[in-house]
Image: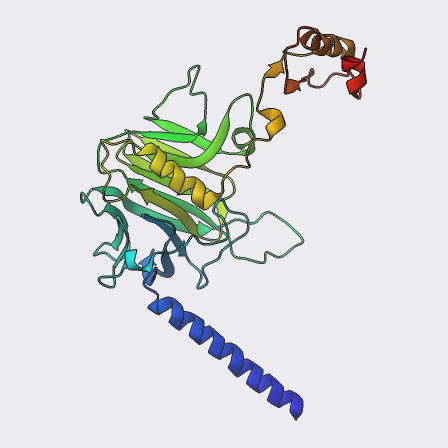
Length: 332
């Protein structure tokens, strides 16, 4: 009897907490939620204030919007200025100088800058397809989808970023007609080539594809953009723009980069020992060669903070397990 009463009231308590949570989110001016219909399926949309003049957009075919640990954005939400948040109607959300609105078709949406009315991006389609699970003895915990997002940059301009890539034989910026696959060979840093799903547009906004995993990025004729994710739970992106008092004729890149690092995390300060002169030679062949170079700097009284030692990949070198004692150099 006591056990059944405990279960009964525990269930009611959990239900009450869920209702309070839903009610809190629905009344918060800095969180916008709505059900929209894509491919005849109801999907959950959530748009949030995520830093000054910035919003985070999540769209899921499932009921629950997820906040995974494996993402670029920091798990802690930035400090929210509730006075900057507005929801003028059931299809519009504003945070500072950035405005999100759903079009009349209740399917596509757009991002607009408040100060000059410029449409930063206009979606054409968002497609979720069933993910084809590989043969496995394990059952998936979450439902995964193949995702594609296509949108337009209505305004003229160019985009810079996406890490650093060698386009053909030359490093070409900005990207005009460019395909970037997010596969192991391209996401692993290789000889100066690295992928970061973040770009800045010359019209004064930045875009982060907050989707960990494989997929691709395409830009055509500077205006049409397509992102894909091979396996994901939901659409998750972050977009930021300049404040109302700034214009694109001003130096806006530092503003966008500051907004970016504030939400993904700042790098650690450079250690004091590494703030001086760095010496690097392309491949020391022996440990003795390295010691002689270090001694040469000491004999000339040239202070060195770091000596970079690199070796031939895939070959055993005489450098072996390198152990350099200060006494070998300074007290010889």
